[in-house]
Image (tube, rainbow, N blue to C red):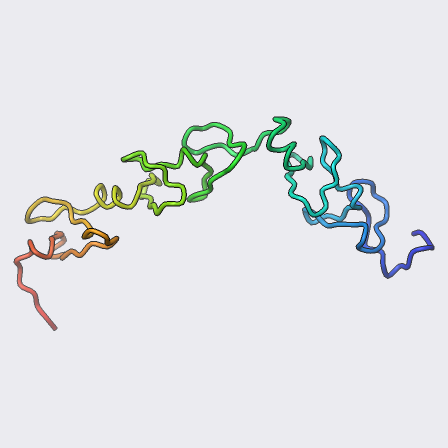
Length: 177
């Protein structure tokens, strides 16, 4: 330890150069590790990254420009829809990654970025109106799907003897308790 530095200001060893780090002014912490500011740099251009966005891939550290635009190291994310690498904006939904333009309703093809959506038991993605149309139970009396009324996201239905009915189609006795 350097005798010119107080032991109380010793923070540990720099991850990159293994030399002692004294005081917090010339150091930073990233990825749970300690670096001198001069050692926390981009693996490609050596730009200092303290306080700036950075990315890590396979243990290497990249500034935003080198990670996104140089093509040196593309993103490891793969679009769940098209199977191609997602190297810019990654949309995360239901634990999966998508290009924003690939996140679409399986029925109508509408892009769903920023829109309400739902998934079925097979993890297929739907806009809300198509989900109701496709997944809605059919009325046992008229055979039509039981859908939410215009402007609503909930449908009102009567269930009797394991059959579904529109309110207006149900003609059975209602027992009030």
